[in-house]
Length: 115
Length: 116
Image (cartoon, rainbow over all chains, first blue to last red; front, top):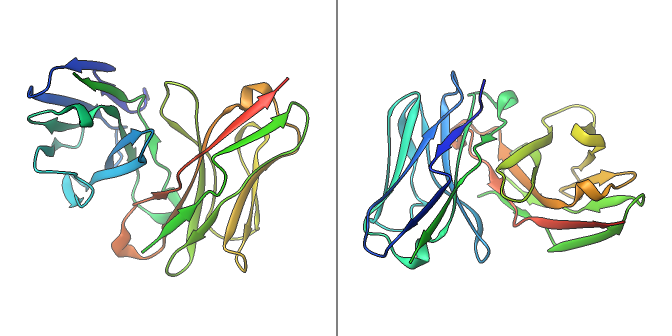
């Protein structure tokens, strides 16, 4: 398996523009997580899905952020409109259900720069 | 609520010396504990986990960790550090409580610098 695939790897945009980050989880995994990593705040969980259903979105910072998982093999994180403070590395991770299988596999991340 | 503390922002060690990265946790019920490593410009990679059983857990790249329930700690160790071990290390905790799902709570990370 190719692992968790995120695109794009790098995104540079201007303030006010819409940004869409994409994630393809490992086939067969039923949990999907979106994280944000910054120097100031470390690694933050934004939202996670189980069987394509959002379970906890309490980490989503503002209404400007939204996430969808239309099917088991694809998820998006959208920021609209984007702001400079959204600049960060965004990671997607997936895992299997069940406590003993609870290993999250991370993608390589998308580095977002909002100018 | 569950939480993880990594008290050291950075650990410096000479190559060949033992390496220890500290982690303490707080969780309701029995914990599941994890260590991840992040190399520059990469995602987090799983190193090892404790679920139940032997308190000493062995993982990838020669790392091990010891679960100490009385001290609520799960320190990461390596007997002889390599320069290539220089990276950012994250401790994480989950719980057996079903409502928590597969959610992990991560510590703030500890940067390890191994000098030749």
